[in-house]
Length: 532
Image 1 (cartoon, rainbow, N blue to C red):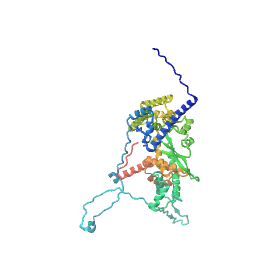
Image 2 (cartoon, rainbow, N blue to C red):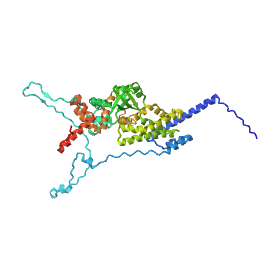
Image 3 (cartoon, helix red, strand yellow):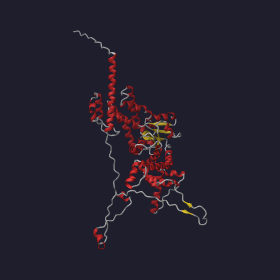
Image 4 (tube, helix red, strand yellow):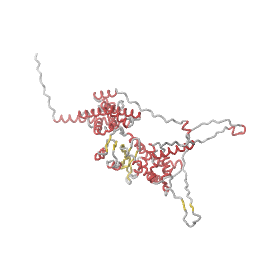
């Protein structure tokens, strides 16, 4: 038997069919991108806000769409689900509750309760002892009228000379607000996030004191004016170590006469394990960094992938180097792991970056310094980082991910910042991310949910000064009310060269020295002195 094979020619596609085929493929890609966006939107609205890798299925609203994925997507999802689930976040421990030590540290108010029998016939009873029950209570604040009496004197031997009188503190000239009330208003708005209109309502409804918002706004201007030298000293101390973190956040402000709000920005400068400074600007351009960073600064600026930082550092490459943030890279891959056909690829990236963070957590628990961190990163982290880079380059060369997809954008973001991501391996001082500066921005995020905007554009600088001082108080564990009250009381009588003593850091050190001296004097033993 002879088999004769005939080759049937495949008809070529007509131009119309070719055009339709390309259009169908484009629609498929667009459908896939739109499905990813809808999935991310639903997760953002209804899902938990976390950066940890989670292998849960899509939300019930998108189960039908997920079921329509290809077999490759289902296999990728199964491989990702086979990984152990991330540990749930630890429950935050309490701070001890109402303990005996807490009650011992508070001022005591004695309330004596006598039996009715004793009150009727006291001479028939003798005291045997007492039982003390302690409770935590609260004495509400109150408004007072502080009368500052300045007596006028004349010399007896020179009755025709002008009389002498003590000068009024500068802060109180032409102003009816006292240091404590001014400290309460600043603390209420910039620490407790109470808008001025709420403070006005509280003063009237609880104390029947009518304080207008216009007066409080003028008093905040006065507070910012007096705290400006402290703000400038905090800002001047940011650049000595040669390493800072910078980030920016949106703050709305009003445009007078239009009734509309525009976007301004708080540029936040953070020295790791140090102070935080807020800088106000109505712009987000690289020119703002020229106003913040001094020309003499030489070192590393850690930031996100915003192009303004690159535009600023490019002409100053000989003295400024940028370090990128691995947390931003991880967030993009976590977002890609929640949707799409490449969940396994995204999960691989998240797990590799997670190993870097495990090493950093172990070093943090040991209290490692820059030298030990640098050595550990060179021996452990560098191999992981190089593996991540090779995988990303391989995916890019093979065009594995569609550029407009969530996974494609995550890969492109990491590769564009790759040189800056390697900086933390070379210097043990550099953190793996800039989460510290982002955490410093959180108080402003809470505040703007309450007061919505800061007022006119001129009020932005005032808010930046006051936020900086309040954040410094939080950083050093200082009660902002006590600090501000003391500063507003002492500052008018001090010289300008003495203002350095009033920064929150110096104020805490001075308090510790004073408390140590008082404790030593009460104990009757002389302070120990170190021999020269």
